[in-house]
Image (cartoon, rainbow, N blue to C red):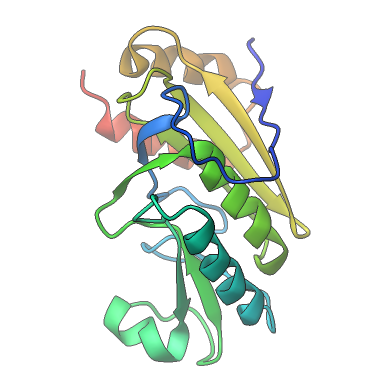
Length: 195
């Protein structure tokens, strides 16, 4: 069975375009674990809102050409009713990783870097991101956040990504039999795959 390749972070944001990393990527994660709601929100640890606000502000200036970032800071009291979620007490803050358009063009190294910077503020999470095949690379990334630290791994898909994906899932099936998050991801991809 093929193993994923760990993704090493550079520690900085990338401003030069590299088609191996840039493209149209699906950034809505209905398979996120824990899976609180449709909006794919991650609970922000109490008292960490200021770090999140500061990080998002700095990122906007460091990568000015990235017009849209797949991260929104939400508060239960302020945004809960308008976004139709009721996840916790009024003071609870959340990071939403869903683009309102569902799709975002971004250099994934910058997405990884952003998640790594925000990881100390986020509760534990586990999710997958997949390429829509617009760039040169077609892949599936696995992201884990545990105890304020992030890790990223990538499976590269050869040839036509949609045709290769069932093969990848079959290879991973035995080793991922008890992985509920992976199961949700496979179900999501199976629903979207063109047969």
